[in-house]
Each structure stands twice: as structure tokens, then as C-alpha cells.
Amino acid sequence: MIGGNIMNYLKLNDKIYPCGVSLAMDLLGGKWKAVILYFLKDGEKRYNELRKEITTITEMTLSLQLRQMEHDGLISRTVHGDKPPVKVIYRLTDLGKTTIPMLLAVNDWGKRLAKESGEILGNLQV
Image (cartoon, rainbow, N blue to C red; front, top):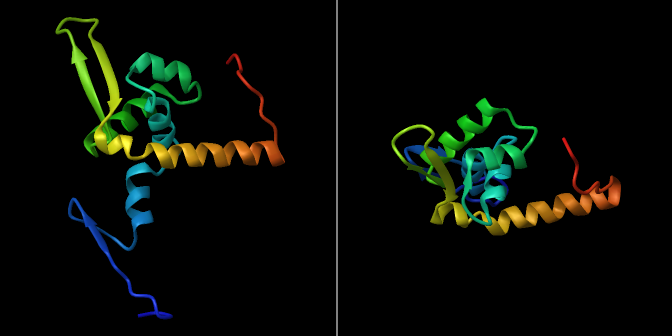
């Protein structure tokens, strides 16, 4: 016990975390995962729709992040058709949907910071 705090460790999928923030950041951390989840919050999207909305992400990074989030149970991937070109749809799972309030709060905080200390540019053609 340090300073009166009792440490409650958490365990998920055989990994031990010192707190809930550590567990959440393991699933959501990095530059792109929360952004991808944010763009899926309103409904399913195809891979190319995500690429058009998140213009600064590379194809390799998007593919890797989608695979990791599917593995972690945050998104589902459904393939329609068996001959190319197949249609692949990504959507939030029930677990992924639980991130929406946090994503909206972080989005609001980022917009407030830009308004106070930067600028809001609106839509850009990239």
C-alpha cells in the first residue's frame, strides 16, 4: 500500500494490468484505433470508405489496425461474395459500441482545444 491506495490489478486474456486505463489503452491505444472506431460509430463501412474518411492513414496501417481490433472483439468483419471483388464490411461489435461515449467525449475535448488554442478548418480536400 502506497500513500493509502490499494492496488487492484486487472486481468483480461491472460494479461495483467495495473489499472483500467492500462487495459483500455492496450485495446485502444496508438494513433489510429480510436479514430477508426470513431468513424465506425454511426454504422458499418467498407474498407475504401474508411480510407477516404481517414485520408492520412496508410493502407497497411489501416489493415493492421482493423485486424487487431477484430481480434480484440471491438469490430466485426463480414465478407460478402466468394469471387473477387468481394465486399468486406466492418462494424462495431457490442463491445466496440461501449467505446462511443468515450470517443464522443475525446472528440469534443479535441474540438474545444482547437477552438481555444488553434483553429477549426472545416472540410478539406486532400
